[in-house]
Image (tube, rainbow, N blue to C red):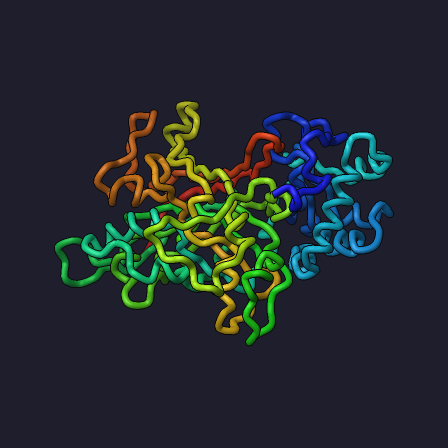
Amino acid sequence: MKQFLNTTHDPSLKSWVASANHPEAEFPIQNLPFSVFRRHQRDESFRGGVAIGDQVLDMRVACNSGIFTGLAAEAAVAAGQDKLNALMALGAPAWSALRRALSDALAEGSPAQSILSQCLVPTSEVEFDVPARIGGYTDFYTSIHHATNLGRQFRPDNPLLPNFKWIPIGYHGRTSSIGISGESITRPLGQVMLPGEDTPTVVPSRCLDMELELGIFIGPGSRRGEPVAIGEAEQQLFGLCLLNDWSTRDVQRWEYQPLGPFLAKNFASTISPWIVTMEALAPFRVPYTRSGEDPAPLPYLDSPENRQRGLLDIKMQADLMTPSMHAAGLAPETLCVTSYRHAYWTPAQLVAHHTMNGCNLQPGDMLGSGTMSGPGTGESAALIEITGGAKNPVALPSGESRTWLEDGDTVILRAWCERPGSVRIGFGACSGTILPSRPHAF
Ligand code: CA
C-alpha cells in the first residue's frame, strides 16, 4: 500500500487554516475535495472550489494567484470553471500535480499563505451546484447483501439471480434529475397495482424510500469501440461523492419486469457537493477477495492490483430527521452504518465491464455503487431492507415510526474514512427533504 501514498497523505501535515487541523475535521489538508460553489444571495456565477477546514478555496481566483506552475497551473485553471469536466478530462498526472501544489500551498509555514488567504470563502456563506455536466449516469447493484435482501422482497423463492456473481449488474439512469444536497423532493405520482386490485391506479407513491450509495466520477473517458482494460481502469476514476437514489417501491414492484428500474428511480437522485479524489482515498484501500464458494471473476475483471487494493473502506451512514423530531429538538436518528468495502465489485471492475463492449465513457460521467448494504445488523442501506419489506417499522425517539418516508422527512447521508496511521477524512453531508405531492387529477 505504501507505494501509493505520498507527502500529501503525511498524517503530521497541518494547514495554516486552523479549522482544518481539528481531529474531527471532515476536510483536513489530507482531503482537499472539489466542488462548484458561489456565495449565496449574491449575483455570482458558480466556480470550482477546494474544501480546507471550514473554508472553500476559490479556485477561479486562486488559479490566477501565480502560485501554481506547469501541469498544476493547467489543472488549477480547469478546477476554477463552473463545472469540473475539464479538470476530470485532464487525467491523473494533472490531478496529482494540483493536489501536491495545493497541499504545499495550504501547509503550515507556506509562503503562499498571504496570497491564498485572500481566496478563501467561509463554507457557511456558500451554496453548491452539481459539480459536473453528467453526460451519463449508470447505477450498479454491487452489494450482494442488498441484492439478496431486495430480491427476497420481490422474488422470495429466487432472491439472488445467478448472473450476480459473474456480471456487475447495472442499468442506465437519468441525468436530468440529479440534484445537489439540500434540495427538496416532491413526492412523485406513479402507476401502481394496489394489493387485491386487478387494475392499476395512479397515486402519490406510498412507498418512498432512500438508497445509501456512492457516486463515482469518471475522469478522462474512453474512445467508443475501445474497452478499458482493468489494469487501466483506475486511471479513469476521478473521485467519489455521496448519492441518494430515491426510489418508489410501489411503482418499482409494478414496473420493474422485464426491463428493470424506470419511473421508480428517475424522478430524483441527490448527490453531495464535494468530490473526494481517489488520491485522497488511497490510504483507505483494502483488498478485494472472494469467498471460496464464489466463482473467481472472469479474466477481464481480474488483476493483481484489483485484488490487492481494489476496494475502499469508506464508512457510510444514513440518518433520518422528521418534522416532529426537529420540533422537539431531537438529533437525527441513524438508520444504518455500513461500508463501501462490502461491495462485491470494485470501481475498476465497473469501468472494465461498462466498456468491454466498446461503450465509451466521458469526463463527468457518474457510476452509482448501488445500495451499499453490509451483512450485519444495522448495515441495511434502504428502508425496504431495514423494515424487512415493510413488516417492521423503524421506531423513532419522537415516538413515531416509519415504514416509508413521509412528507417533511429529511434524509441525511454521510461518509468518512478512518484508519490507524492516517488522518480521518470526510465527505460532508448529502441531504434531501420530502415535500407533499403536487395536486393531481387522475
Ligand atoms: Ca440504486
